[in-house]
Image (cartoon, rainbow over all chains, first blue to last red; front, side, top):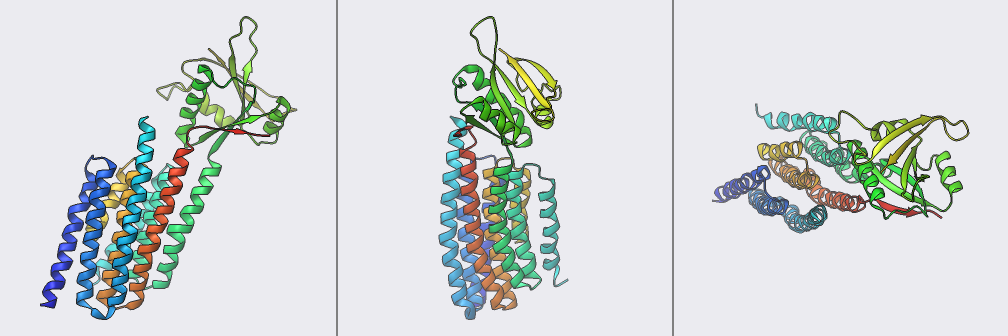
Length: 94
Length: 198
Length: 85
């Protein structure tokens, strides 16, 4: 049962990655790319880490720390990137 | 075959360093340096050197990138000196600045316009290599129209600014350009003078 | 996993806009740290796991710093007039 849950989490995380990353190839605006990338990366990574923590419970505190820092830092980095890129594009338009 | 993934990850390292080497724009190269740092961290971890990986993460992605960006910013700049009284609000001066920026942008230089109080301070700055060139008005006898001239002390910048057949646009395209090169022993080795006639 | 890591690397090589590159690099950095964590769990190595968690934090912080500096430089790109006294 635990094994099945582990592989389910790992594979769905990988599917999230594979779904979000090819958005980079499309000719869309940077904000759209940033949105789908941050959704796919954060959710996929959290799923993978949860799957790992189910597999080896002895590293649970470390993996919880990983989830927390992943959430906080990815959100902040996404915000900073969107803010700076948006500023820049407005400048080049005007 | 069990450690195939190790070889795959280590193979990313020369790939990203090759990307870094063939990149010409210094700012883009900095971003690729970030990739190289991340890939290097992964390779070191896979090979079992956790301490080296930690050092690479701290040094490579934070310290080196921030230091390099400051170095690039302060070194890749062309400083053009003017006198405070120079009329900078005219159309000709705006065209001149725009065209010079376009021309030196090919080699990723920025332009800084530095204003000085007096002619002596300006010439002293050129002599002491504080600035790379002087923009001043060219005395024209017939009417009150301003004509700008740019005096440069570096041959490479002159090569960039002079009309060039390879480029689709001439850097000073709306203005006829007459270039005079002469040497003055008292000032600097050689002075490149571009006279712009509106 | 390595395939998903290769996609943004190819993209940074292909892309001209510096911000698109930054987005791809942020993706790479988080993927690298997750791969590190996976390998650490596979090998049951606590030390590697600590390194993975640290590079999540440090990599993101470094990218933020880089984005901020790039933004500052882009703002100053319009010619500034320096008054020298």
